Image 1 (cartoon, one colour):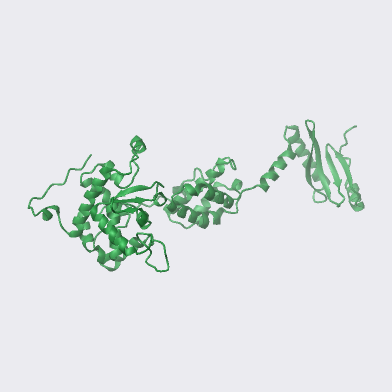
Image 2 (cartoon, one colour):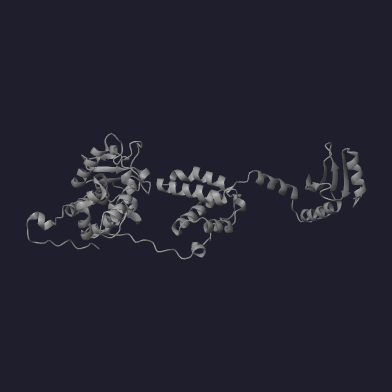
Length: 420
């Protein structure tokens, strides 16, 4: 049968539509006009791929006129002759649209699959950024349609300080890496974004502070008057044990063994998610005993000071108390934060003659290289000796005494040389 070319005209089309009877008429080269029982007039392109027949809907009549339908059919014919299968491509695209994942849904999946392995502090920070910024700015967008410029706009308009924007960009990169890992997208739109190009040079970070011996001797004897007795005990323990504030605030009395002189810190409260054992020298045990007595029936070493709250104290209680001491109580040393107790301990342990490795272990820092892989001891004698020497030094600062004053001798001993 010879192929028909341009067999239809507008008069015929209008007549068939007016009659309303089902019809299927070819215009030639696969372009077909169809009218269904429901009076829906449609343009269809019919073609073959191998032994299989294909149909591709081009549009409805009269929205798509006869001349426009012919142009559209010719364009598809060029693709078909080039080996493409537009009907199959359209089905794939429809399936993609049906299954399209928005950035908000991607965030949900990231939370479900990635959050369990993160430290509690990271979970809180990431959750705040996901809910308050990423979902707000990019949530409705399809993951496949998200462009680098969308992420740049989010960072420019979020209103966060430089350091938080750095965390936000890192989090956004991880979220979209999760998408690339599932082949939702072929490339991560956050890759290659330069924060300095967006926000300018990063402001200088505050340097960690090491309180000098003179500053400790000025601070510690009156620390209870400055911070209150409970806060003063917390501060001394924080300084002597070298732990992070979060680890002390979340200390559970059931994990403290005063007979053995040890305190186990749960992995859930640790930055690295790995629990560890803190040796407690006799002086520090005394401070723990007093805090335990003050805690009453609470399972927490530092319970909330509010009767309606059965949890532990606020994470920022020491920070706020120290700030108040500077602002209202005339504390006259350099401004410091609770986290500076760790750099203070690190520096004084080195001054007391302990090696870099032991001072790192005292702060529960993972040792680099093969040493950190194979040294899996929990009870580390070298650490206990270092902590005992450090606690003795703190006790002398609290009492306002020096070693030669305690012994009654007029000979001033030299401190050990700093280890290499």
